[in-house]
Length: 400
Ligand SMILES: *Cc1c(COP(=O)(O)O)cnc(C)c1O
Ligand SMILES: [Zn+2]
Image (cartoon, rainbow, N blue to C red; front, side, top):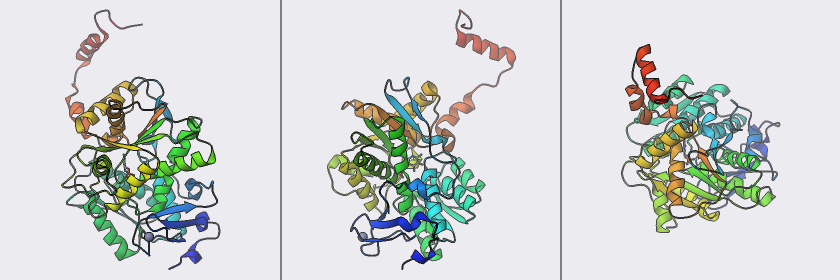
């Protein structure tokens, strides 16, 4: 069914077409997540060449244009982070929400449904509120509390399912079919979201004058990685980036279906057997029921000559501590996984500089890893505090 007539004349959504990532079938922009010919997932193709997904944004909270900051103490020279935790709801998901909600409004959706490990619900619910649309968020029962609080604060109807992200995914698709609302689950169900992540590549290229050696990206299903890969491919084609950076995808060893396929040299990704166990809850996506999404990510990675690496929880915890203590950057475990991944890869190969870690979410999203030590901090009177400070300052007393 063509929805062209419902596109307002001012909307550049009229210039977007949907292309099947699997069979190549093309149709005008609409809100159906699937290819009518083969049932595969879609990509949003913008015209004219040079058009940016952010051009489509009419619903905004000031997302994107995040700082690129050096991390000399945690890593060394020529190492940077893309500070995605400073986005309005505390994660990079806001880039996708702004574009996808703007398109959904132009195509006259009546509401929004989202399955989420937490951050996407926190984000989509904010942009839905901003657009005046109802939002149903379907979350795994184990979702970190603070992400649930954000979705509730934005007025979403929050329902939790027993099980993991893949169980929530299935329910959100049922809700979409029942209601006709747009599905903004951040897998490949919403092609406008995936396209939006190319803005991360554009901003990094601008900040580093087109010279990037490597970029490290945390991977759940992988739309962020694919969006960044396609962003860089376009920048290379346009001549504004000298050559494709080494793209490094990181998963947690407690749920690493894409790394497993990469390491075996497989052409396709299989769903992760068993429940995800990693502390990096934002990237705990077992892909159960939609393993093609993993295959799509693997293809994007291979096309640009990238690599995948997995990291265990102990390495993630150390990376999280170091980013916080050495650089003042307190981020959630899924984000710290990028530093752990860089260090793991450097034991096997030289990672080209400059290297950029995408730090995707704020520590307050998922404070469980630091909350135990927060509860341990002493409650003292003034004398006790001064004694403690004297200890810290050392026998010579305060410096300076
Ligand atoms: C969603 C998310 C990811 C993973 O992104 P995908 O596009 O699903 O691969 C990584 N880090 C954080 C903080 C996230 O919220
Ligand atoms: Zn198709």
